[in-house]
Amino acid sequence: VQLQASGGGLVQTGDSLRLSCAASGSTLDYYAIGWFRQAPGKEREGVSWLSSGDGSIYYADSVKGRFTISRDNAKNTVYLQMNSVRPEDTAVYFCAATQRHIIISQLRSEKVYDNWGQGTLVTVSS
Image 1 (cartoon, helix red, strand yellow):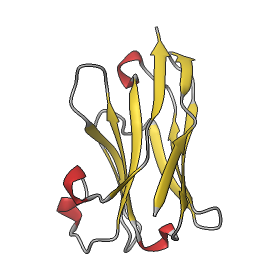
Image 2: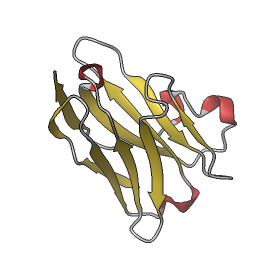
Image 3: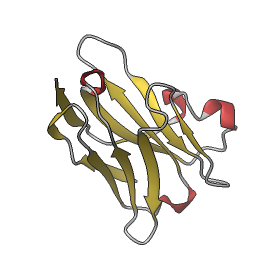
């Protein structure tokens, strides 16, 4: 599967933004999905995850209550709705997908994801 992330841009603190991760070459129905981000000078970190089985959703503590991950199977697209953004949300955001049979505890590890989008930059001004 090929992933194309989009929707990034320059926003102000408190604004909302929706990132999209469009898939081609295969349906995302049976993939686990992860959104990750990498801020300047920092390591990449996980933001949100959507399991392939029961569709369980998880968030990093830093975004819980502000970000929402969702999947639109008809459009073969996964979204990350970002509300009440903060300057510390500034980063390049990546979507990733895996078809591996993984357990929930592995979902947050970027090592299990075989397919990555190219990243989209989100800049939050204060």
